[in-house]
Amino acid sequence: MIFSSQDLRELIVADTLNYLNEWSQSAENLLVGTAIQESGLGFELKSGSGLGIYHISTASHRAVWDHYLVNYPDKASRVRGLAGQHSFIENPHKELLTNLRYTTAIAWFIYAKSGCTLPEPDDIPALASIWHNRFRSKPHGNTEEFITNYRELGRPRSSNAA
Image 1: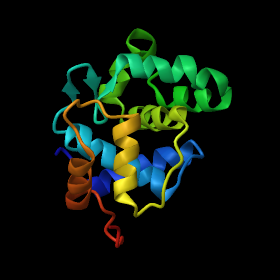
Image 2 (image 1 turned 30 degrees about the horizontal axis):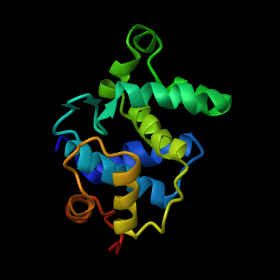
Image 3 (image 1 turned 90 degrees about the vertical axis):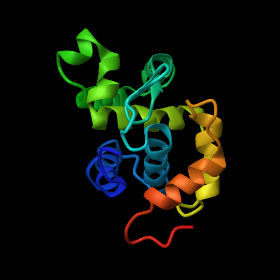
Image 4 (image 1 turned 90 degrees about the horizontal axis):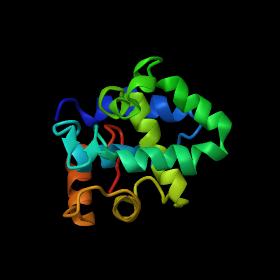
């Protein structure tokens, strides 16, 4: 773990979701749980074909742009605004490794692209199921592991989440 889930939650995830006009407590919890599950909060930034704290594959990265954001120019413009001016043009996938706000936006739009309906914010088993069915990059990852990891590392300080 390179930073706390609370720092990720407050400084990156909530800020990014608000910037995108996509914030909800459920979305925030889902992304924090995803970062915990996929990379151990940044402990492992590259795994197989996955990059960054969410282990997003280059294929998933392209799919967000080619099959989702292409249909939403205002959202695409906001996401592009998060990327480095020159680095995005030179190597857009590297942004997944080096730009926390950008990779958080892409992670969120992977979920949005899937059309999932978010549960109540404290329904961690339901969030785990969404992660497992719509995002999971680790073939061995399972919902029980997500739930355990989220309960140990991810709950907001002021939450009574399950």
